[in-house]
Length: 224
Image (cartoon, rainbow, N blue to C red; front, side, top):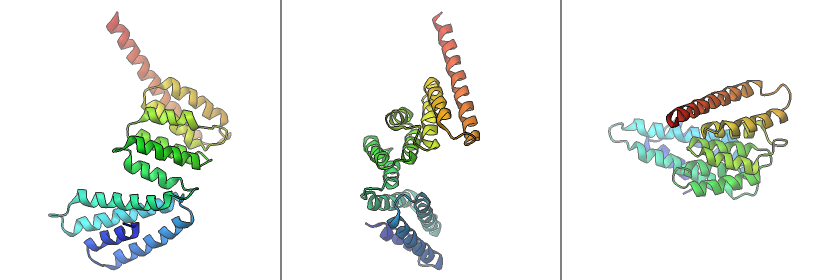
């Protein structure tokens, strides 16, 4: 079922109102925007918000009988349908990121294939940063590190790509990897930019190093 059909179906659960009609109209407008640029992240996220509003409206209609899981499934189905519609275009990478986000918990291998394809279609590093973030959030920090090692170009990619590799290494409790990539990121950054984010990364790495040192001391004590 097409995205707009699913959105209209969600709207009908709570009855036809001016608010629902406005959301559908806005959904059509944003869908046209994405037809022109499937990697318009703001438009994609705005559509996701419209779907979420529709789900909430349908739940409020009858709180005693509303099936929250069913409505959430419908919302995911809507976003999946939208992403799938847009993902076939040669320059389309963000829809593949969305498909991976929706499938990572149930099909990690399929999600990784989609992420790799998204990264291959984008030369800026935005797809790489988003891909690693998805893997980190889903609990696959090591997979995020591997993706970063395979694809990161510190001289060409945006700051966020290197930032996500570092955070994946922190999540995976590999501070030595995080420190290595932090130094590379710092070396290639534009002077004067991203100072706050670098400071935050430094704090995260230092804490990870302290935690690793504490674990090492505890292990030494047990073995002595």
